[in-house]
Image (tube, rainbow, N blue to C red; front, side, top):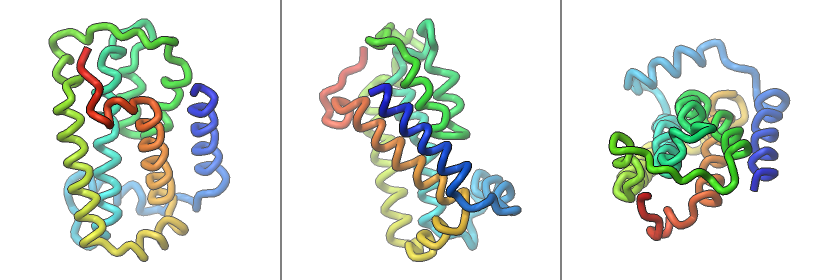
Length: 180
């Protein structure tokens, strides 16, 4: 799996550096407005994607909670994923020990490993995706994918995180995963 994670990371970096459109001058302002909930005039499909990207770090933290205090701790990578998504998480998955440490996360983080946390995150993501699909303009999202760096990178990042989560934690998706 390490080679797959490394390959996906290299593909994301190559897309960002070579294939994605240049960053728009208003990209930083758009992000700040979206973070403050100033969504008026923004495509709900793009806002939904942006918010789903905010849920991924919690999903990965839930599954990696036993590794947050390991010799190579997951927490800096999970924290970095809040800002840069898979660009931060994939290096951890390449470098993490085999087998993963599986330490008890301690009472302060044990709640994070509970299956209900992942269920709530999944329901929130489905709700946001439904809202984005029903209220958003998918044609405008497709155009933005081709013309705006933020949308393109965010879309590919979200797809990579979904793939990696499914490959890395298949038991969590089937409900067979239990907290450690």
